[in-house]
Amino acid sequence: MKTSMPGARPQIHGARTDLLGIYLNDHLAGSTVGAGRSRFAARSHRDPPYAEPLRHLADEIAEDRESLLRIMRSLGVPRRRYKVAASGAAERLGRLKSNGRLCRRSPLTLVIELEFLRLGVKGKELGWRTLRALAESDGRLDEQELDGLIARAERQMNTLEGLRVRAVREVLLTG
Image (cartoon, helix red, strand yellow):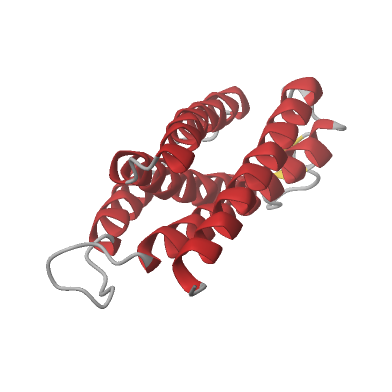
């Protein structure tokens, strides 16, 4: 770890570790929500055009969370368990939201879940892009791994957008 002058904030290869730790833990919290929500969506939607893609996405999103944890370890960024716990609890509480139905799922739930997942994957992609920019000056970050994670996030967004458009047409169009 290097510092530029007495009293300066700690830095790793030019990156401010205090801010990087906050940033990565915020992304970890988001990935916890995304992993939970994607698993829930995969279990909830058994319709053939949605079931397999959602199961595959849930597996990949969980793998991406593990990649983030591995990257955090390689950078020496500690996991803030309270953020992970709070985000996991928030995700589970979010399942109780009103959907216009008391006892069963609304058809609109699928559209909202797909939009939520797509937003989460976009945030994840931006996180990978941030780390990719840092990789140019920090040898602990694997540029090829990050390029692969970025490409996978782009594929996930395309898959989610295709599912979302299909759901919008099925749910919101009449006739």
